[in-house]
Length: 322
Image (cartoon, rainbow, N blue to C red; front, side):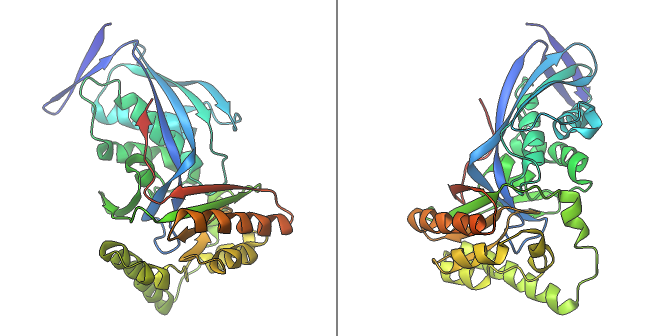
């Protein structure tokens, strides 16, 4: 199998022309209530697969889209997977190109990181075709560039945990995996409703008062402190979104009833996953997450929406080559 050689700075990158790789990226809970755009965790049981082949022609192209969503742009700059791989190709100075096939397992507009997962799986697959693959964390800016194609903004609260797994805090250009107890589980309920990220973000344009910002900062600090110290009681006292949730809740029929169903069954906290409409809740064990998740799903159904339930450890695995 032949290879093309490129040089960026002092480093050479070898790409196996004709090489083929497939990668999987899981879904995710963005924001986790208290960490708008800077905190997220991976979710088991749902994800996207992307197949990438290295080609001699110096372009990136989308050759196939299948799965739950097929009506996606084939134009590279408007497709998260294509744009992410193009960003990677440009940054590494590669002269070869890539052909991409998507298999969508996450519905778009679900609040489960669907657009981000395609970008993450794409760069992980493309990275596997390098003779010396980059560490996963170094793929973050490329996947982030892809996310812009869908949401119009560079926010990594889905990208980071999908890459690294578990709960990840974004501090500028650093990704920090936050320690999570093994027994900490999440119930995520996805109603059959589409909420576009761009529309969801429009609800946050009006300025916030200083007191709200201080309260949200305190809640984020409390959750992180509780996780680092292993104090789930502290986590539960602070897993409350006073900033974003009040403006987005009205977009989700039955939200308050779903949230109450979780809290009444012992949730540490419950809020909107990403831009919605999915709702997540954290629990101190899997059994509580499972039983409460059923009640959350029933609350959505009472509001006239069919819904799907996912139960996952918060420390779920991240992207991987298949």
